[in-house]
Length: 212
Image (cartoon, rainbow, N blue to C red):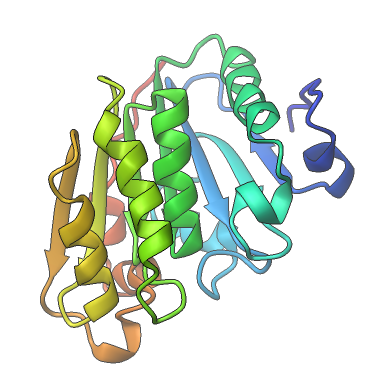
């Protein structure tokens, strides 16, 4: 466990971050999870299914399941600073990634944009089952600017109308790549990341282990 000195006290005070350092790995993954994990699965179990448990990992738990920029704290500048501090604490890292499901998917896209990650993955952005034009417009306004560095890979079920609407709104933003899935059962259409894990497809999505 690596302890970071950070001025972002809500993270330190509430113990909402788990960090694992793998000195022989050149990759750092920021994983954004809710109060209980990722869409009902314990975060560690899901990351094991994703093949990420042996990478440098910073797992940010949102105790309120409300998105890290509200659920963890409202000081976005301090939170972004923390990401950079975390990156600097791993001098052997040359690749930075973000990953999240549902509300964590929003966190992944926003954080990936702000810190200039190599790739940000977002799964099943349908959080409430109701299309939120305000949240989607905010995301589109941010991603449409582009940062010249990040690729955004968005996975969703074509049977999920909300996810499809979100994809249509942000699909032409710089760096955005859409991955519509046609074989997801309706019950799993709002929990794509666990569904991919259950069907054995999740580990093939992320890059292979890169030694430092």
